[in-house]
Each structure stands twice: as C-alpha cells, then as structure tokens.
Length: 449
Image 1 (tube, rainbow, N blue to C red):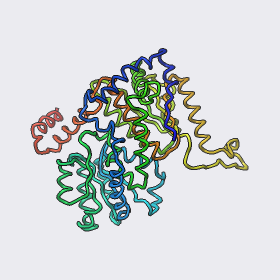
Image 2 (cartoon, helix red, strand yellow):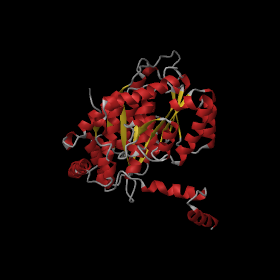
Image 3 (tube, helix red, strand yellow):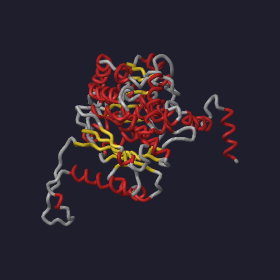
Image 4 (cartoon, rainbow, N blue to C red):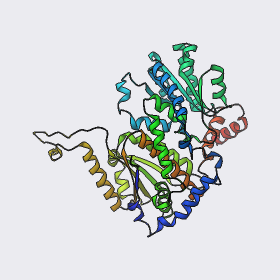
C-alpha cells in the first residue's frame, strides 16, 4: 500500500536556499533524544513505539468489549475532555457517515461525546435525549477528578443505573483510567466495571492509539486493526534509521521551525473534506499544548475549505504575513456524485455537467493554493491516498512523531502542560472548593477591586 506523502516545496521557496536542510542536524538530534529518552519530558515517551507494541491479542480484547457494547447499546456516550476524546472523535467523524446521528442505522451504535464542557443546556439536553435509549458510557480519565468529565460521568452513571438497573448498567459502563490509583479506578473497582489502562507514560494528547481511542472507534464499527497497521507502518517510515531526505515527519518538523524562525507564527491546518474537521481539532490540541510554552510556539489554527474561504479567505489572502498553511488533501473520495445538467442553466454551471463533484473541489483546492502562495502564504501539502482506517492511522502517528521532534527542536518540553492548571485554580477558588480557602479569599478580594 502507498504511504501518505509530503510536499514542502511551496513552503521552502519562501526561505533561503538550504534553510530546511540546515535544520537536518537539529532534527536528527531531536529524533535521537526521543529515541534515547534524553529529552525533556522523557517520562512521557510511551507513545513513541506504541504502535509496534500493540499485539493482536490486545486488539482482540478491546474488540471483545466493543462488541459487547455494540450488542447491548443503541447509544454510547464517551465522557472525556481534551486528549481523552478528541482523537476518538476525529477518527470516528473522519470515517463515518456525515449524517450518522440522523440515520441511526441500527447496525452501529450512535457515539456521543460529553464531559468536554460544563454547559448546563448541553448536559440537560443530553440526559433528555437518553431517557428512552439503551445507552452505555465510557468514562475516560486518569484521575477521575477532572471537573468537566467527573461531573458528566456522575450524571450519566446515575441515569444509566436508574434506567437499566445496577446489574445491567455494570455491563455497559467501562472505565479507561489509571492502573491503580485515582477516583475513576476506585469507582470501577467498587462497581465491577470492565477497565482498560491509560499507560502512565502516555499523555492524553498522544493517547488515541491506546484504549482511550481504540475502544470508542471499535464500538463505532471501524477496523482498529487497520488503524494500528497504518500507525505501525508510519512508525517505520519515520524511524530513527530513515534519512532526513526520506523522512516526512523529520521534514515537516524542519520546515515548520524554519518558517517560525522567519516570522511565520501561525500555522493554519486546512482541509477540503468536511469529514476532517475534528482531525484538525485533535491536531490543534496536539501541537498547541505541546509547543505553546516558555513564551514560544507556533499558534495552531484550522480552516475548513471551501467553507471558510467565504469568511477567513480575505484575511488569509491579504492579511498580515505571519501565517503558513498545511493542507491535507484526500486523493480519492469514497463515493461518486456527478454534477447534473439543467435545461435552463440559470446558474451558468452547465459547463460542469458530467463532472464529478470531487473534480470541482480539487480545482478549488489547487486554485486556492496557487492564490495563497502568490499572496505570500507558504504552503505545506500532505496527500492522503484515501479516507480509511489505514491512512488515518498513518496520519495520526505522522503528526505525533512530527510534534515530538518539532517541540524538541523548539527547545521546550513537548509533553507537559503547566499552563492548563491556571484556570483550574481560579475556578476552584471561585467555587469555594475545600482546600482552596486562601485562594478563594484572595481572588474575591481581587474581584472587589
């Protein structure tokens, strides 16, 4: 099978000759530091060789639990936030029917996501929707105390038990959590839930190829064996022994950092396939949380084209030249739809009659890329042969290893997130959480002033 490919020529042309290649030694050193475990955050490198460490037996275990929930549930709610849900949602929405939530084909459960916000209307509407449904829950949390997820899981647990009884609920609630500690682990042990472990050395944003992502993806009806196979092949293609000239992950890390040094502070992830919207959302967390620290880091943004050409297109074409684009193209769509002819031709589009809709989309993509390059926007191009489990698996590992390399070249710890705690401390103080009395007094005085 083919691999995804990378073209950096329309980005490198904005740099001095040899600028990308000059990053080769830095990239190789960063890749070596990952391999040797000598980089900052080296206690969170479990993702590095995760794909090749996944055994057929482990996939069978995940699939068996997925099959149980598929049999016993019409709806499965994934309770998690950040890396505990974005990867699964990205894959499910990329591979699924765009209108799956309306079709409800009875063959596959509807997968819903909660625990990623504290919206009272959202949660109320969710519980209302679930009232007459056979639903199950996957609770994804290492600690079990993350506010958004813990609040949601408490609501869903109570409702599931009320509707199905405690015995039956026990069979359709699964915990993906720490191996031995934390509130979620204690709850699962007490209630007798089936559990899977989030490895201690894998951070949430790198966890999509653990049960965090694999279980929901399998429940949705997708082939996790092929997903893992794609990641395994990309692990080899981006290996330590692959020369810089052939290593697309190393080249991606190099060109990003070269552009950053030349004043390009914003990377816009662009797709022309609406199904990739949440791939971009997952990518935003992966790179934003990994690189945005110590006053450094490229700001990750995303646009869905051609939709956002009618809102953001003007700024991208003519705005401040602090941006570059990374465009994901899907070479071959999974369906075929021909543009019809119309006798009156009032819209003037008969010149497109008989063409595939994808051909129109591809020409919009090519025309936009040319216009943006002419307008001073460097373009990185990632080509994906088709939208299936295997190539999504490749794409996931490509971005993960590219992120690890890029963060090390930038000189930050790509595997921590100290800034995430700031809002939590303020929120707990404002809510008068026990143990935050001093912070509560201080913040309330500050608000008075």
